[in-house]
Image (cartoon, rainbow, N blue to C red; front, side):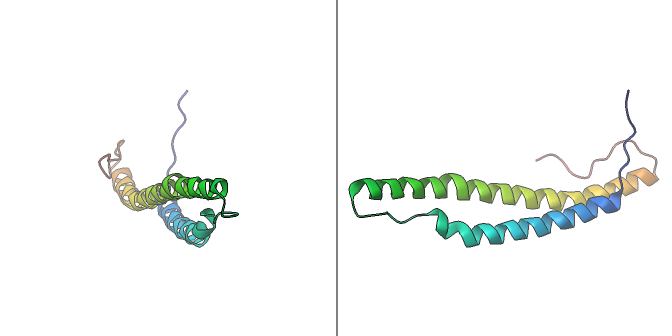
Amino acid sequence: MALPTAVSPEHLQATSAQMCVNQATITSVVVGAAPATCPLPAAFDDASCIAAEKFNEYSVTKFLNGTAVGLTNLLSGADLLVPVSAEYLTTDIADGSVVRACQPL
C-alpha cells in the first residue's frame, strides 16, 4: 500500500536554513576543540612521546578530516534543498509527478 507524499516547499527552505546554522555551530565547536584533540606527551620518555604522536596522527587524519568532510556534505545538502523546493513548487503547480532540481553528483 503506497501512502501519499505531502511536501511543503517552505519546510524545505526552513530545513536548509537550519542545516546552515547547524553546520556553522558544529564548525565553531570543532575548531575550538581541535587543539585539545592533539595531546602533548605525558612525559619525555619514548613510550609517552610515541603515544602522543599516534594520537595526533589519528586526530588529524581520521577525526578532524572526517569531520570536515561531513560538515562539507551537510552544507552541500543544505544548498540543494532550495532549488529542490523551487522545482517542487513549479512542478506541483503544473501537476507534474517528477521533481528534478539537480543532477546527481
